[in-house]
Length: 297
Figure 1 (cartoon, rainbow, N blue to C red):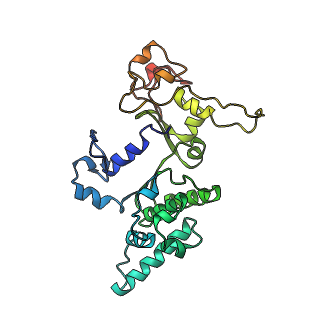
Figure 2: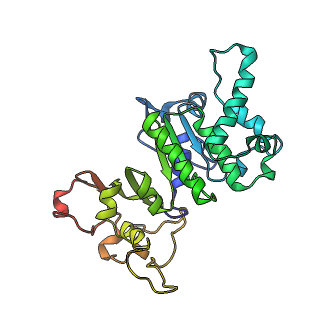
Figure 3: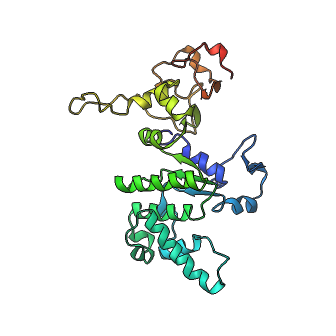
């Protein structure tokens, strides 16, 4: 969870091992199935992608080949049923592709499969990317704003599909979003990121009811309270300013220039502290049940 430019997509691309040419990824370890991804070769990393780890990208139209029909790309991404004779596999993959399109809310899969990416809307391209990502039923699915630019009923259908994969097929889902209300409804654990740093992490219900970090509290306060009367055209509470560029972060706590609780001590970067089942990075956390001295950093 975080604002645009907070580094959420960069984290997802680092996990997948698809950095830009000018990136440099540094980590003590990045473990997957008792293997360190940082020690794997490019070929070994690619063997995991699409099978054990899949991603739904935020900009689907740029991830589809504009020179090929959508159906060709979708059928290529479908898993092969090796129990069938080889002459029946192509037909089976095509039927499988149509079924997955229907599951993600496409009412006319034939028309969509015979179209090119540039002929479709962003919402339709997003549904295609979701069908490609979930068809293999991976062990980890990274969903980078999977319902962006979709109508509300389709969003609910997509989230029900993801929930079904999570609960029945044992698929872990890393959901990336900037909509706190939606994340709080569907996720068990929440990590709040700002300017490339973890501000707070822990169980979603606990964070929503008792946030420790000022940034998390500010995000929660932007959610309208429909139980109270709100005047017409009333402004929601917001933090002043905007997130800094990741190339030039501020000194110390990166929220410091915008934080309503900032003090002199905030010029030093806070450590990520652990208290019970919660993590937070703040010198002056809210609503701690005991002193900071009792929390472990």
